[in-house]
Amino acid sequence: MRFLILGAGGIGGYYGARLQAAAHQVLYMARGEHLKALQNSGLSVRHPEFDFEAKVDAIDQQGLLDRYRADDFDLLIVTVKAGATESVMQDLKSWLSGATTPVLSLQNGIDNEIAIAAHIGSERTIGGLAVRIGGHIIRPGVIEATGVAQVVMGAWKCAKDHPGRQQELKSVADCFNRAGIPTTLSETIQKALWRKLLINNGVNPLSALTGLDTRSLTAHPVLTRTVYQLMEEVALAAEADGVDLQQCDIDEMYQLICQFDAIKTSMLVDREKGRPLELDAITGVVVERCSRLGKEAPISALVQALLENQLKYGDR
Image 1 (cartoon, rainbow, N blue to C red):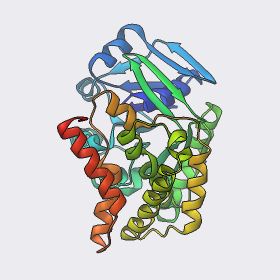
Image 2: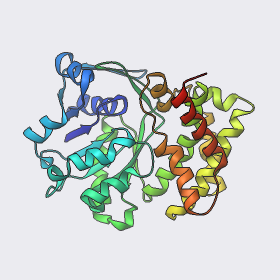
Image 3: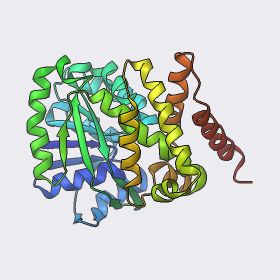
């Protein structure tokens, strides 16, 4: 199959390498020094169970627009930071219009698919999430990844909305699985995304605030309770989107976090590298959705305010 990775950073680069190693055609869209390294030296991926080092086809956004059509690919995989989704979709609006290629989001947050569908329609929008993966650029052209790196995907917002598309996704899931990417299809992908937000809001902002990895957070006698409270607030917020998360969902995802390896969250890595945080897409969404319902998310609001203060004034 032919894949385009829109945002070949730690996550996109890892999945692209897996697909390329399985003899699929992969084009990586990147920028800056990372793009130069990909074009000049190729891509190197280090994972406990997968090593990859090879020449790759890499391009910037303007080159993509000039040299390719959207229908040159079987699937477009969006792995840019959540805060860049709207701008990327706006930049590619004309390029995507009139095409039929579906677009899969593998990003943090629950608003990416909404933004994508607003530009290309829900029929071509594939909801997705990357589960139990840590992936980071450690230097231009070199990616370090950990975790089982599962993928869950499904027609947006749920399978019954687009049964034909859901059926087509079986071949994509088979392709991913054969490439060493454990992949399952979800009949209710919007709920699956909210369930992932339970984890993201539980550990991402708190890790960026404290500098601790996931295992350190869940093993800490006080912070582990804070993790659970942050997850409870996600369940409240989900009601704004008509998604029902029960206590069993919170407990299941909390136990999953507690079983994680000692992973540095993406937000912690971004904080260490001085990059923008996906705070609005994670904690901000929880606070906003609760406010929309006339409810409060005090722990999420507190963590968000503390992080914003640190980012504004520095660690003093």
